[in-house]
Image 1 (cartoon, rainbow, N blue to C red):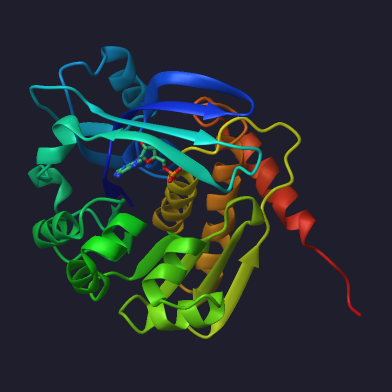
Image 2 (cartoon, helix red, strand yellow; image 1 turned 120 degrees about the horizontal axis):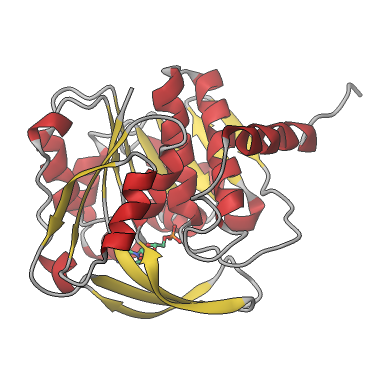
Length: 302
Ligand code: AMP
């Protein structure tokens, strides 16, 4: 089964203790769709400017991603810059130039409207709602958001939350959304806003998911070589949703496996700059790292 993702397509400038990259392909929808493409067919909805290169369109096409939903508009593509210190869980935004993204008004091509899985990446909640108006009875809707919308557009965000099945956000955002520091209590508060599951991304500490009454925790993969955590959250979401769409099991066991699949993809993402860690993987590498995750937390009886 396929997925439609709506979100940013960007040129990123990234500085980390391990190096820097200028104006390299990025954006939430980009990381998401490349990661999900290892599991199922993906359709992407976004906007780019006249400066968006054919080479970068090819990054999507090479992974078999349907790019009919990428609109090209007069002007420059969205640009974002971020800098990390040794603590890769924290970053400073250097600049955000919305450019054509400022007027983004997602329009789903007719062929995308019956797609069973929908991922609303981090965009204005009003636009996320407009996407939900365009899809016909999806099987599963998941959503990401960020502090900017939690602070500035809470009412619209509350409306979208009532209509999604799964919220995938990072720990700071969960705390802010719930106005509660304790993550367990924050997750309970978020669940009372509408979603039936909340998956909290915790950077190098992994992810904790609240699946109804169950809590599932997966560690961050201990990596020797790190490069760039940009996009790891969107890559996680892509692996997670991709796995759900491929296997169709949305129960607690299916969600657990999907969360590990998301963690596997995110671990590849941070090993290289930009999309380099996730564009040339094969099924065996993905399966091997999945087994390595299983081995990480296996233990015997007391
Ligand atoms: P992540 O590291 O998972 O939070 O995602 C980083 C990606 O999000 C980068 O590739 C950026 O281009 C993109 N991004 C940064 N700020 C925004 C924003 N305000 N809206 C949409 N996408 C953004």
